[in-house]
Length: 276
Image (tube, rainbow, N blue to C red; front, side, top):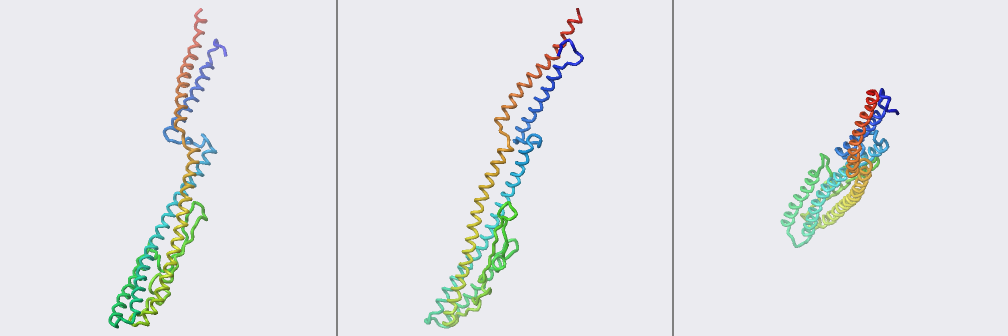
């Protein structure tokens, strides 16, 4: 490239191209600093963008799954609370049946005990009717379904709250116990014992469901953390590195501007030739 040919200032054009590239790179690094992301456009890293998008999809699915698990545990807690209250009442009924079975009591005393037990049985039914979640009754023996406990389509935990003794009228003769006689009270002891055992079994099932959900919750939490860590390493900007690159480019920008000026000035040497 001869300085005596001035119709095309090649050196200035090359310097301008370099300056434009520096400005483009500086804008990219400054954008990373402003957004906190290394990949702000697919052209910066197409493969990394695809990988980060997939990881983000998984992370968001895991977050929702964690919420689902929490909701499932809340439902089971509501059901457990209802069962626990019913169990407490059944224990009291059994105590009253045991008391009424003693021959030392009079008929009037047994009648009074029977009336108290009838009130307790009504309360057991009331608990069954009032223990609901989103309009669904949890203790009527018909609550069954699957909680979605993962980000995959098949990640589900089937739950079935089936209990014949969830109320005084469901599947047993507890609602018809009669404590007005010693014989009836003795029979009521066996009936309430069976109901207590059934209710304890239902509580055991709930405990097992909750244990599984807690394990699932821990697994999801770890998976979400690890997924986010990988996504961050792919997509997020390293602020120290980006700032270092900006400072380097700023120096190069100043140098390029200076070179561009010199390239334009150097062509003026022709004037000295023409002037002579």
